Image 1: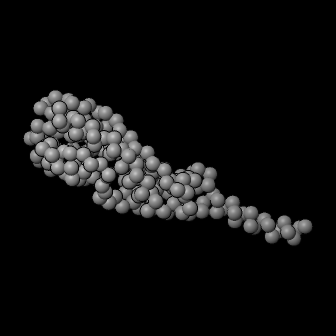
Image 2: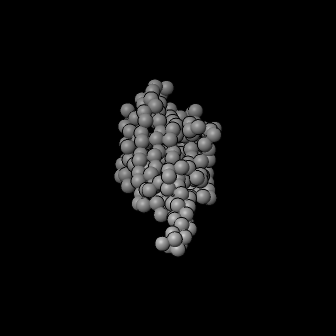
Image 3: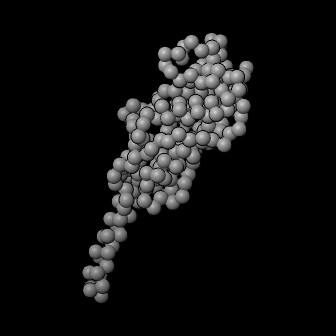
Length: 197
């Protein structure tokens, strides 16, 4: 019996080690690629400036998530390859342009437009414990002819994705994109309503 216990003890320690840490170490790098939604709205004739700011805790940047071990403890960071606000700006501008809108993102020309869109990124975060999960929350303001049409209205997208077997960078990227798309599905129609008033 003691011989069996001696063999099982090291195996038990190995299982404990793997469930505690596993693939939970090492920074994951998320590539924020251009993306499109499935929205088929018409923004023809709509002209506006677009400004996006990142209002998340400055101490977190460029962190956009964490890896957790088998006990739910944070063991590694997930970092973005570019500024989150730039990515959100480019995706939103791309969507509105694809729908026929004319969107200005050059800082020098933002104040000259009659219609102004401002988006503040409040939450942009992914994590993996048993499953991948992400949340993207923004506050939208639309100003037209110096009148607030929409003032800091919040939109949230959440997503989950499969089992977390290896905490891969690609899976963090995918779940963030899914959360972003859900948020855009809610926000883009509101932007167009505001611009058309």
